[in-house]
Length: 502
Image (spheres, rainbow, N blue to C red):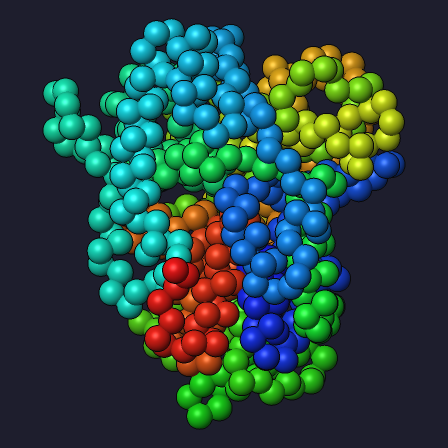
């Protein structure tokens, strides 16, 4: 197995239980892929995902691989309110966790009568898109004929003057929500998954539907605690890990994958090879060689965004009643979308501020805060692609100035932030590239736009090779990575007859 990311580990544990002898070769010194922690002076920060959605994915993994359930290995709590939103005009709204009626009431109270009903009508259409696409995009292997998934399942409103359905997230917000703040709310969900609202298909409406229906969860000790638990489960199932071991080639014999070659010259035979590394990196670094261009695996071409995360060590305790997650929306959403499309960060991005009330992540009497923004993967002064970090590898002054703007925006969520700041650490797509092999963050699989947002299928063009993790079906995100591991394990154990979870 190549790489010890969450999708690869989810596959490894399941395969080990099925009787396979599994060895994981990881080029870095640790596991978890993008699910990392930065620690300093007693403060700890998640530098990857900060919350978990669809925890049932990992509950199923732990159920199928051992006696101890997930909640015995990780302390999960529902985040309530699920999120607080601060808009440029000064209004703010806190949305409850997994409560449709509570969300309607909150929106009506903060944004005016009728706001909740418009959002609820939108979620009803999002539910239709979810019902139409859930199984093929989340629970089943990607079909050889993806043409049905190239069409957007998000339906047009059934009433009113609009007859032509919206094609992008931004268009849904403008035409159907008819309030700049509601449109910003929708944009925020897309941005959180690394999607540009101006190019993301309308089917991305399933993302707020998923979160508001199934809830948001936090792991005590940060989401790295979930990676720790999955790693420990793999060890308990006798999965072997070899760290600081870079795979340089998937060895092919007789027209199928037969093992891997390592940078230190070793060769390892295998009946199956699972690649958890980013598919673009495998192609870029020629770890896998395809003879013809039409045999190259698909990977998402719809976006090339990354994340800048600013870790803030703050003096003084978190105030009572503070929200765990606050989204501070950009004062210039059109400018932010234009900047993403043009390959440069906006002047004032939308930022997500996470303030976990977690004594494992901060010294007594202090607070650890992360502020995250979605940015072009290429950097502050030029475009980039899925593989490289572009200008994020340099341009320190421009990076610092962008982080300053992020912290300034975060002040709307954290009282007295500037006065309380002890120190900060800035992490860019260059750090993501170092840790994972790709600067950008893959988004979830989405139908529509001719298949531009479909990731690589789990079975590679080379027989015996499989892809697991965020760059393969069903795409990026903690829950999606766990689903990817389950699909790969099912394909290996049950073969071509495997039709997904039931």
